[in-house]
Amino acid sequence: MKICVLTNSVVGPRMELFDRLCEKHGVEITVYRWFKWWDRPTRRVKVVDVPSKLALRLPIREDAFVHFAPSVRRSVTSNGFDVVLAYGYGSPSTLLGLWAAKRAGIRTLMWVNNRPQYEDRRMFATRKLKLLWHRQCDRFITSGKSSLRYLLSRGVPIDLTSVCPYGIDNSTFQASIEQYRKERRRVQRELGIGEHDTVVLFVGKLVEEKGVFELIHAYARMEHGKNAFLLYVGDGAAKLSLMRRSAELGVSDRVFFTGRVSHAETAKFYAVSDIFSLPSYKDVWGLVVNEAMVGGLPLVLSREVGASEDLLEPGRNGYLVQAGAVDELSAALDDLVNAPDKRRAMGFESKRIISDYDLGDLVDVLAQILDVTG
Image (tube, rainbow, N blue to C red; front, side, top):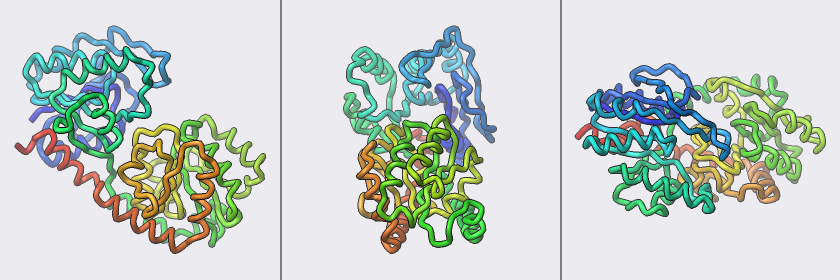
């Protein structure tokens, strides 16, 4: 089977999924991407950068672009593809490719990550325009419950939808974490963490959208904050402001910023942490949640984190809070800092839940959706 993927850009986890699909099921995948936002070597997937007749940044948001390349019609219809998979609504080139495939009798699918709360109901024209994408598709793939609700709210019949969530190689990442746990005390000393400190971990880009300021304020208000250490792993535009804020709040001696680290290094920080928090205002999924769960950590997530609906069972493996609700976030963290037995029990539940979201299993899920074994 030959599969064509149309996308603005494919993030690493999805490309790894495609690579494994090629290796395990012998399919050929060609990705036509409109923008080179991500450039990681692939093992089996062929990536083609498509030049555009029109490439514009839209004023809607930072990552909103228009890409129009008439050549995509020929690329889609003249290379013997059995399936065309559009990743998101993307640009006019995506719509053009789907339209051409539909007219040529090629099976068409669309992978949707949108969430209902992210839809601006004032943008009536945009919502109507998306229906053009839907009309070109035979089937839809969603990443989880939230994006499924989005499609249903747009009138897509549930029997035309399938779910293939985000996942990582659980066993490989867990092995890395366990290796660092053997050196836990050494890593703690490197970071200035006391042996009996409870570590609250954030991993991600340090930007306001991730709720990083709310997290530091929540930490500063904790009743048991003196027994806790806040660890920010990542870099971003808000880093210097966060460092100043920690000093203003009088907690700078209990907050550590790693700066930019490689993905391989992040395992070290999960290994020395006790609680994971991602209080984002907007997060399509949040793959760091998968990683934290593989590491056996309880979660404190905002409702705006896409993964929260699928991976968090409130009261069993963590707590769900409202984005921006600093007092609520502080209370949830305080409860876990002060209850080591509860942390361990919730961490165990995290590992149990995430066992169903291993990348190897998701390869077979996607293969079934695409009918590559049929």
